[in-house]
Length: 233
Image: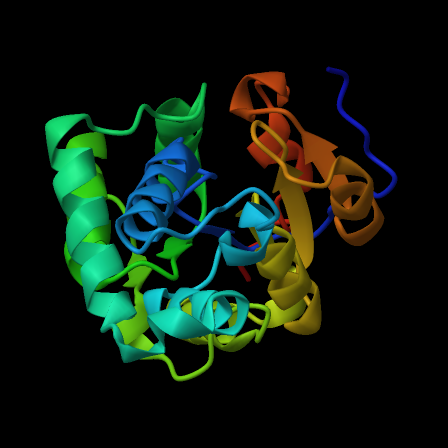
């Protein structure tokens, strides 16, 4: 799949990564967990839009499921979903999106870099350890750190504030429609990772550019988009 680049980011001083679906290919684990819960309650997922639960917090996913399947309202879905998901990825760790680890390390070496995820801190810390970036990543924001789930811009604005970078100088890598909407609502540049994108047309409409995965980015991408360095006196 060819990348599309309707806009070229410029003067980037900070880079923010979503986690699930952007750095790791974990959305199939989520779908399997939801299928299991629905099956246990004799509910069919035939007409359920799984893209509606990509990129949002467990609490927000629970609300979507309660709306679609009112008989689940008595269940403590958020906790159940998280526990089952964490158990699933411990048994079969989600693979990295192609090129994700190498590109994240390159970003960390050149610019202030953050992860801003809808996942809980325990899941985020497991990924950071798997990628070996504990000492390199400057900021890590998880669901416990902010109030409103994507498409609210809260997580991205918090990450930018902790990085010390103005929102308009941040570039966000996201896979979900909710995440892309949140990045643009924050006033940031947005790049869509379309490896498992539920709606490519909508992602292309929202994002400043799209790539299937990080291997499609040029090797000098970070240098191309970086803000000019200030010269000394």
